[in-house]
Image (tube, rainbow, N blue to C red; front, side, top):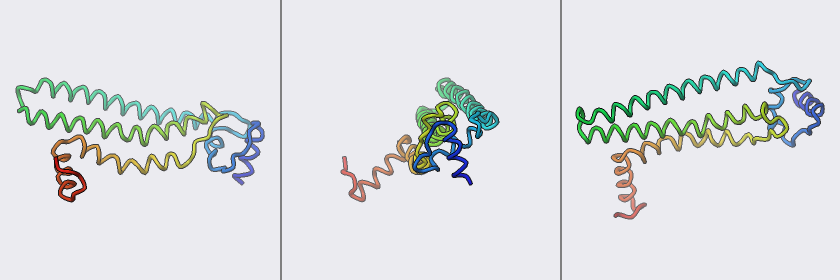
Length: 167
């Protein structure tokens, strides 16, 4: 069974089985029973990081291009339109950053930790679940906070409901 195999593996590595075996499933996936790294799993993780790296490069190049267009388009579009586009662009950058912080980073840490630090692999399983749960809540707030018209509307609603003092 999984439990006995994991217990034998950890014993062979001079480690003890945690109180909650589910917490150390990545050790079991990352290493063979002989204690060797499962290179195929490691390369799959590197491939995933490669795809994430390509996304980061595409986002960076696109962001630089958009910034250049916003700066050089001063004479083509009105100041109000340029300001609106700038707010939308900033909101877009924040919306790109939120999944990186709440989704990619925790998963990356949990996948790479067993390979880099096999003797100290305790990441609570609730950590990733919690960050994934916060993503749908935090993501829309970026738009509401970053775009002035949306922010003014929400503040108006809160003032109308007497949840926020009028200024």
